Amino acid sequence: MKVRKAVIPIAGLGTRHFPASHAVKKEMFPVVGTDGIARALFHYHLLELDAAGIEEICFIVQPGEDKMVKKYLLGPDKNYLKRLEKYPALLREAAEMKKFSEHISFAVQHEQEGYGHAIFQTKDFANGEMVLLGLGDHLFRGKLVSPYRELAEMVKVSAGKSVSAVNRISANELRGYGTIAGVRRQENPRLIDVSLIIEKPTVAVAEEKLHVDGLPKETWLGWFGMHLLAPSIYEILGEMIRNNIRDGGEFQLTRAQELQRQREGYLAVEMTEAQRFDFGVPDDFVASVRSFRHSA
Ligand code: UTP
Image (cartoon, rainbow, N blue to C red):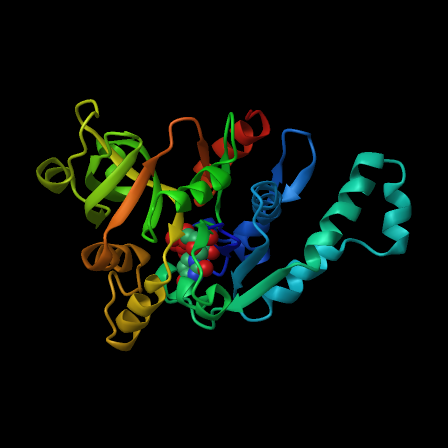
């Protein structure tokens, strides 16, 4: 089995980046690649997913934003292209990105009712297949292999279950992440059979309930920002939306993931080589722009 599809949500409001996000959505903020080229943040997801062998990519957008994304990918008009002739690398980039414009699709989230609600909009796109999901305001880099590919490969051992990428987090990071308890597989200790998922636990709850063997003291495994989702996630999200089951006013993916775990089991894979870059708040954005530029 091969994972062919990926979804990237970019329909959030980006409130924490106000007022910049009032001018440009955060997933379109400029980020400089290791090659020195400035691209819109979301563009790197396309490059990484393409390199990971993903065939179909769906962006979750606000109404009208599909045109904006397509316009970006289609590149500039003839006059502008003429100016780019002075910069061959940028001219090549314009040709490369144009190819993506023909291959991507969009799902519209009409109201911003949370991350889980956003993912639900891709039910028809997924059409019963396992899908890769990457947080739109994060980027990922692997030293040896693309993290998207690494996670997609897990389909071979997951027996149809969802698999979330996790990495080590400390006590002060718990408030930012879905965090797991579980047991490592003997034959592959990076792979964990998850026994509980809690979104943004307190330190006390994490100490009591979120144990994974083989971790140093006061260290937990939290969401890395990408998931390989089994199709039943859409039924569960649909039930949550019908029954208006919200957390903090929004439909949260983590609750759906915990329900999915209870019904059919859930796996996590510890990312040991890969790096994640969080662009979601201004200070993290500044730090991530710098470190991404010089990442492996
Ligand atoms: P965030 O949790 O950062 O939410 O979303 P946000 O709305 O973008 O930002 P703030 O909290 O208002 O500052 C994580 C990812 O999920 C997408 C966002 O675009 C971001 O890439 N998202 C979030 C949606 O697509 N729809 C939503 O309703 C919420």
